[in-house]
Image (cartoon, rainbow, N blue to C red):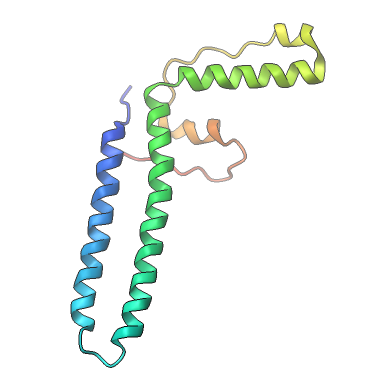
Length: 128
């Protein structure tokens, strides 16, 4: 099973930011000397910041999924402990001691978001 390399996720983010900054630089040259330059530059800076911020949020999500894709056992163990505690609080020690999550050695990337956030309606699939 092919794993996602977190380094590739970081490189993709850096490239995306570089492209947005290059676009910003190109447009500032075009706006130079125009009648609406100050306002247009301000709006351009705002939209550029927003674009990079959204890309950063997506980057964090993708990086987290890439790390989980590489090593799922710690997350699975934590999830099992939380589920066990929930069962213990609701149904008691006896039921909690009999609960087991099946061991999963390789989790597909397409399944990760649904595991991490089962309430999410449409998962964002990290494609490589």
